[in-house]
Amino acid sequence: MTDHPTAGAAETRPAPEQLGTLLLKRGLITAEQLTIALADQEASGDPLGKIVVARGFASPATVAQALATQHGGLLKTEYGFATGFGSAPGTPVAALSAPPVTQRVIGRAPAALVTPPVQTEPDAESLRDEIAHASAETERLRDDNKRLAQLRGELEQRLAAESQRAQSLERELASAKEAAPASGGELEQQRIATLEAEVAARDAAIQDFKETGEGWKTALAERDDAIRGLVAARDEALAQVEAAKAESGDAAETEVELHVAKADHEAKIAELVAARDEVLMQLRATKAELASREVKLPEIVAARDAAEAELEQAKASLAGRDTAIAHLIAKHEAVLAEAAASPADPWASAERHLLFFQGAEGYELVERAGPPPAAGDRVEVPGGACFVARIAASPAPGPRLPCAYLIAA
Picture 1 (tube, helix red, strand yellow):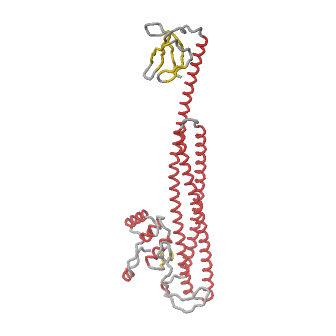
Picture 2: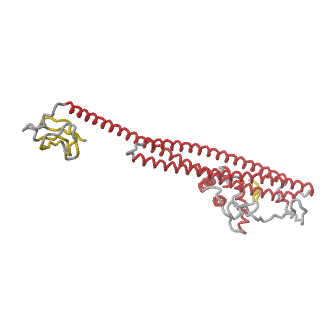
Picture 3: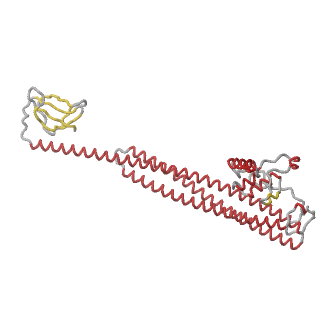
């Protein structure tokens, strides 16, 4: 196998494209794979096509098609007969330079006879070997399609698992929303809304993956139909060739026709291989996308846990506030009860009294006219209303005045 046409052909037509360029242009290998193959070729001196096949970058039939394209038409390579690509990537050559064969069509009598150059035509045994190779390639395509179907099934299972995890996350978010207090908790509500948006985005991505999986399922079914049709056409052609050989005994002519039919079969096999490789590349890309989604899931879970921790902290703060309020109410009720149980007010005849309370800048002592208010009364002072906790003698030096000790309302 060679990667370039002979020197004689180069003198009569433009230099062909390099093998690596042909494969790269048609998307049959990547730029990274071509770089690796060229490095191996420089180190070992082996043909580039052999290195590409050995490393598994492309199938033997694909390399054979590229070599036939370099040659300019039908070519016998170590990977079998090939016709070459067409003008569009992945398209076989529509019209070939016909070899000097008879115009006889399988199943019809020949219209004219042209003696083929026997020394350039393969013998019947070689053609049988090529047909056997085509059958093996067909079976390999079937196995590859089965593997693709298996991978698609695994992807669907992983998508189902991700859907269940997303549903579980939605249930937890719903529980967090129900547990949030009716007043306050705006921060918790905002975090819950953010998590809901992320869950919705994840659901949309999972739906896209499901639709992609259905598209693969259809593509695999079409590949199977094409393989079945290809096998049936090959078997029919073989049967017609055998019948023609038995009737006419024209072995050389029949072998050439078989050769042409086999070349067409190889071209179709190459198309299927290229289509399979494209589906595999799409599958790898989808797996990478799914992996990136899995990386984001821990972030969502961490955000949810942080929201739950803040919610618990808010609950604890509210519980502490409720306890303090209950303590103040109990203390106020005790003061009221003490005031109710005390004897008649000894300060009822006082002409002036003092108010002792905590103001904006500290405790304040204010003098007012008249008798002091009773314990439990509501009194307006600078800074807001207060309750009278108790009445006692003034702590200040000077005239003995009653003093009302206030607490915040």
